[in-house]
Amino acid sequence: VLTSDLPINQISFECGFEDVSHFIRVFKQKHHLTPFQYRQKYSKTAYC
Image (cartoon, rainbow, N blue to C red):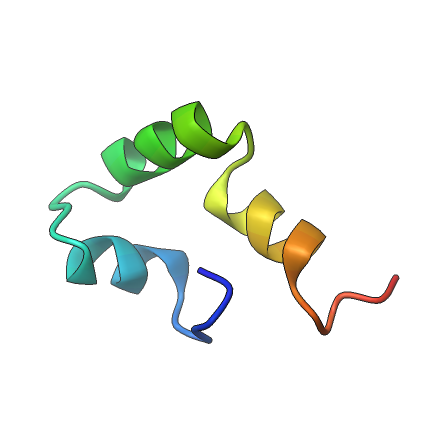
């Protein structure tokens, strides 16, 4: 999620998830943030 500029739905499909909603749920269970929130919080370009 952090090392790619691809949209979250594309990342989820490349990780083998057929349903982006399932990917988001699994990601949130592990990281306590949605992929979008995670990207915003930990991205090196997110200075604000």
